[in-house]
Length: 82
Length: 154
Image (cartoon, rainbow over all chains, first blue to last red; front, side, top):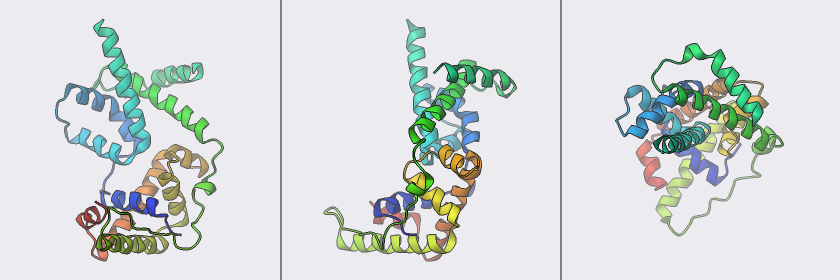
């Protein structure tokens, strides 16, 4: 079992950034709404939401959903502002 | 699209007690809808891709060519780290962890990996987390730090 060079490069950085306790995707989903709203206000994240940020750094599925949600909220805010 | 909307409405109604008021209700509801919609898109996008095709082993040792931006010393360091990583993968990971890891590195969504393994997203995430922890422990045991990795692959 040997990784291709590009796989190895992607994995090794991810491995060294691994924490003992990491949020799961379900836990991230439970907090993502609050996370996006706090982000949009520009206020600092608390410890609980910092865990969401760290999860997004290593989970591309949840990151995709975060971007779509954030975009949808931006469109909604624009509509409400009209 | 209509199926997703209906599914989202049902899910929101079934899980109303989970809304804790830490965000606006509409944001919470939209997050659920986005998740279900993305899940449906991923299923369609990956429906014809097998786990085996994502985890097919390389034949022999993959070439590790130096690019012009990397010094010979840096390249040697990278090569040594990757050799160690490959050895640790053989020694420390289960077959299931190897399959999940390479599939994820290839871009397969965790949900799709879980579907093919007859498992669930959280269980696969924990499998991957355990794999990364084992590899991290192995790299640290031979003396590599996060800073070593950052500087080798900068």
